[in-house]
Length: 173
Length: 127
Image (cartoon, rainbow over all chains, first blue to last red; front, side):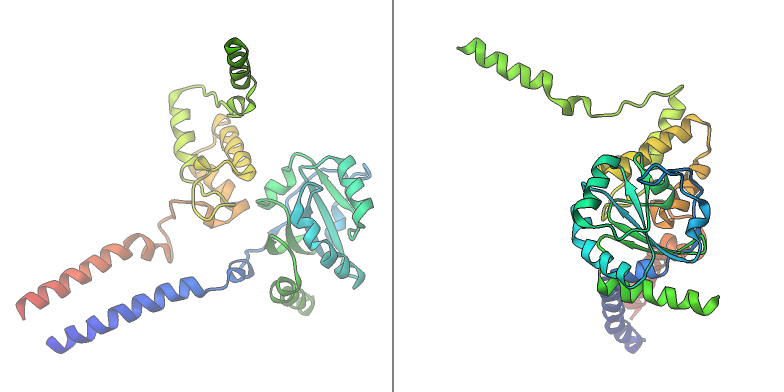
């Protein structure tokens, strides 16, 4: 009996240590790699040029990047998005709670890596997508949202979260 | 001189926009109001490390509060509203985890732990 007790006294702190250690050391990114895929929400919005966005535009493999001209981190990730677009990655912008005038001026000044940008001044589509702020990026495969990155997109997040999902999607099709 | 100072002081108060920043929610009855306030304290702010949307002034929390208000006014049930939110922002958004699956450990874990401690305690006393 006594031995069992001693064993428990030693075991308990170890179990607690491992438990909390795991919580602390777990990579933030893992939270997003277990993303539950869902159908892209329905919407009726125009792009930044004022043309209605066609629902078929979300077929194939697309990145949807939430951005705004007031968003400073968007400027930080902008060169990386530009590089992705040069590698023929198709990126669609979701212009979030912005004015089209400012947004278009921003694109003119910093360059436009987007095929087009959906203009969402009230953030309705963004709300349905679960956007918590700009920037955020979603991976969309044939109208299904399969991946999500919060905050700045960079090489590390691209390689650890989106690339494996894209490869998986390509194998599946 | 002092009149001028007082004038400036009070004009700052009158013109301060923050006093008008708070959204005032109006309800048909006190039950709706109660439900609204308990709901917003049970929905997690997606932008914060920890905290409900009631305690947060992040833009997304403001949007969420407005949406919950709208849904309460439209007569949605608490469960419908929570499903609506978690469909968009994930299960993570519910501060009161549902009683299913691995959440059992969350709800009853502390009691199991307490029970274990008591058992150990009594074993020890007998020895």
